[in-house]
Amino acid sequence: MSTCPQSITVRDITAPVITCPIGVTINCQADTSASANLIATATDNCDAAPAITWSNSSTKGTNPEICNYYSYVITRTFVATMLVATIQVVYSL
Image (cartoon, rainbow, N blue to C red; front, side):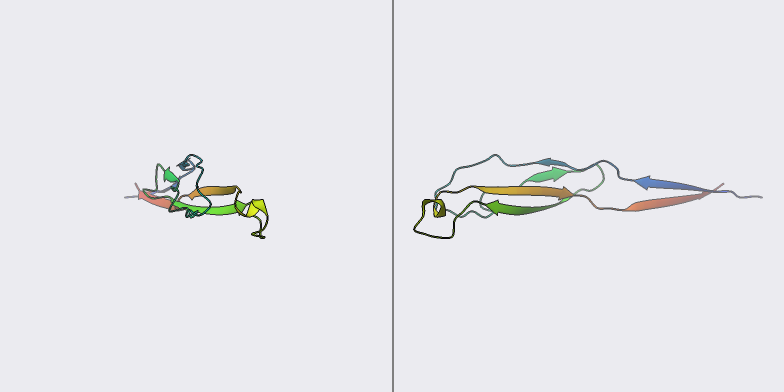
């Protein structure tokens, strides 16, 4: 009997698909958190639950005496990341 190993490397090279919530206009006293204003969703061919993170940038001013303290734009950037794993299968023939 003789054997011959074969190495097969399996990699997930397809990025997750992310769906972002639509833009909204809210009152200046409303909750501006991501959880209160919808969070993006993502799907992936290999990871059943891709992680979603986000970061914010805002044009809100720091002085309550100036208009841009109450009327401003928050730009929320969502990122979907998948599990990174390499599975190696070895066959003996």
